[in-house]
Amino acid sequence: MATLNSSLVQVLSAAALMNPKPRDIHRSSGFCNDRLELRFDSGPALIVKRARFNWVADRMRASRRAAALLRRRTGVIAPAHLDIEHDGRGRAVEAYWRIPNPTLAEMWPEIPVNGRPQALRSWGELLRRVHKVKLNTPGILHEEHSASGLAEHLTTDLRNRLIPALRDVWPSAIPIAHGLLRQIDEIHDRCSARPTVLLHNDFHMGNVLCERRPRSIRCIGVIDLETAWAGPAESDVSLVRMLHGPLFGQELPSGWEPHFLRGYGAELDPVVLQFFHKRHMLNHGYFAATCGWSDHVRDIEAAITAK
Image (tube, rainbow, N blue to C red; front, side, top):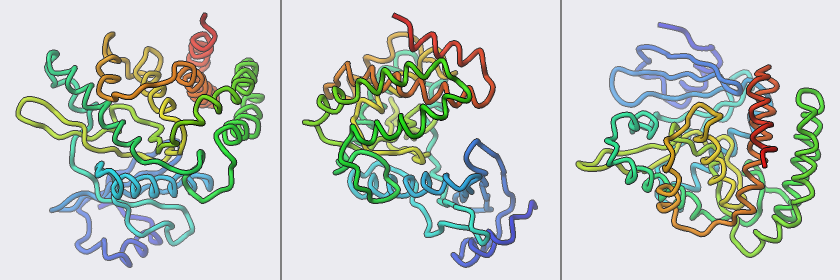
């Protein structure tokens, strides 16, 4: 059996999670986390994510808070995190028992074509349930903060994080970011009369949990909440649209979006949707640029600037 880092073994043992010991450990690595899945002879697997960078600790705090808000206020199924925040060497950790339900991405190929509109509506209904969590202040979830509103949060993020980062890897996108800066006051005004909601911020099919029913499926839960934040509902909807469009490897057949929006069932501001669509495209383009995916970056920039 593969061995765990001894410091993490001590932390898990202290939480009474290593008795009985796992029969095997599956390891994988992403951009932000090293992921361990500890599989036991009986019962669910234990998911353990360890931060690869110090700043990931903030994301893990956001994940814990978002999951707790969903379970407490909506009944949406979400990971129930264990009371572990660091391993014995100070690396940020989040741990939770794996939820056994399949994801919508896993189920999609087996859903009959005539059953897919219902599945898409259920997906939209689940996002509306997530957005029933109302929060006082737009912005980050990992700590209480004193941001005065959406305009301050968006301005700070663009000026202090994204624009300086773009200078090194994607300078041709800087004018697009400045265009978003000029829109922020309008976006703030359009959103000011509506509640700030909990945003999953990565609500693609692979992060949506489902249950099978005799003649349909129902979307009932979410995973991977590390990028959750508080803001306008349009941010989540525009990201779903982007991720399942032609550029990001999860494209759905034409005609899927009206079913999703019918399930969501709330009015959305088209100007705010477009603003967040561009913001998401810039963030994903920046990531692609840091990875050296120059063709993908060009495709994203062309999509952003298309008339």
